[in-house]
Image 1 (cartoon, chains in turn red, brown):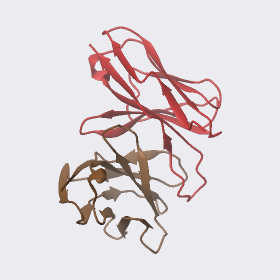
Image 2 (cartoon, one colour; image 1 turned 60 degrees about the vertical axis):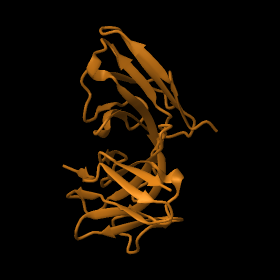
Image 3 (tube, helix red, strand yellow; image 1 turned 45 degrees about the vertical axis):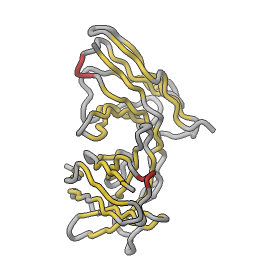
Image 4 (cartoon, chains in turn green, yellow; image 1 turned 90 degrees about the horizontal axis):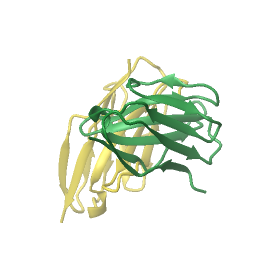
Length: 115
Length: 114
């Protein structure tokens, strides 16, 4: 049982290049999320998907696009990378009944450096 | 809007001592959940403890306990008998009514010294 997996683990891009971060979960969760983590800022939600076929903007969506390919996979795309997008990116998934202590499950993260 | 505030950027504690990490929150929801996560230097996010807004007792999980004061809107994490392996970033987070989304605080870096 792999949980939430992310690829790649590390990536260096030049300004203006594009790339896609991949995320997959094997827990049959409906909801998936993309966060970015910057020093002193905690985790901020970029986009989320409450179910297959739906996506919604989070707190910091500018410069990103997402695709919920199927129930398992949720990808994050940077069309034209900027140095301000240097960050650690986390994918997470959950399937939380109301008033449950179930948590989101996080992937190991992708460290992205944009030069 | 919901908000989580962690006012301690860094904390130091001696091994075997207890330490309290502060968390205050703001929400207009009547029902919500509060979480604490640990992030060691390796980077993964580790779930520690959960407190529901209607739970009458403070949550406990081993050496972790959550000091929940609803009227003050605080959900402080207490780590008893600190260990060197507790050195990490700690994040407080909240989930509002009928949603899966989490709002995170900015974190507290805890360093445990011998």
